[in-house]
Image (cartoon, rainbow, N blue to C red; front, side, top):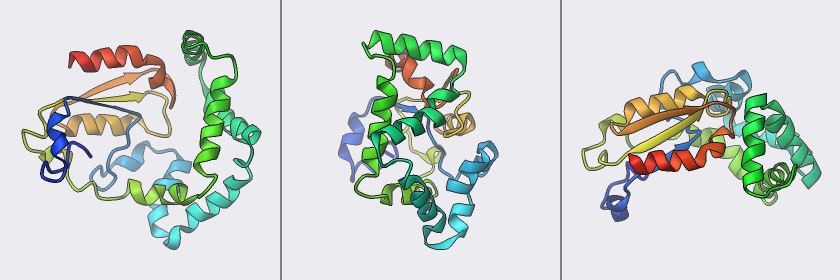
Amino acid sequence: MLYGASFDVFPSGRNVTGCMVLAPLSPFKLHKDHTKSMTISNYIRIGPPSQYIPFNLLQRLGSVVFKNTLNTPEKAEAFVCQTVFDKMEEEEKAEFAKWREERGKVEGQVEREFGQNIMRGVQESWEGFIETADVTHGDWGFAPNTLDEEHNAHPILLVTSEGDTMAPDAMGKWLAENYKNGHYRSVTGGHLATIFHMNELWQELFEL
């Protein structure tokens, strides 16, 4: 969005020298094949069905279901483990353990912190959750492949994970193909795998 904003509206855009996006979603309005890489649950939650059914009824029903899942730190942690951490393959678990050790985090700490953050995110309001589908289908206000030279002058590093079912690899590829200065990078693992490679990813962005 920073790359597409008019410099009259966002003068600081001229000072942006690079951008890295982890687990990106492509603009659904422009990426016509975005549904092909979606899981069934994501297809229903943020795909076309989310736009056909009025008043965000699907999302409101989902918020009712999840309220009891995310109303205590213990439940939120269990939810995070079930949906993300427990699904890691052995190679990713090893990378996670190494990453955790390097940062002085004890076993279970990261899962607990993730759970607490998710719980805080819906503690006061579920509107963000309910509006997610509308946002993903929203208009970016520009098409990446029509940006002028000045907006295309700096690199965007688009990083995906091969096993990510929340932000599918295909969406990152589409973005890299449609930004003139887009650079695609994929790592092994699921939705969180990119954070285990941050040092090398920053190095790659600086080199670009």
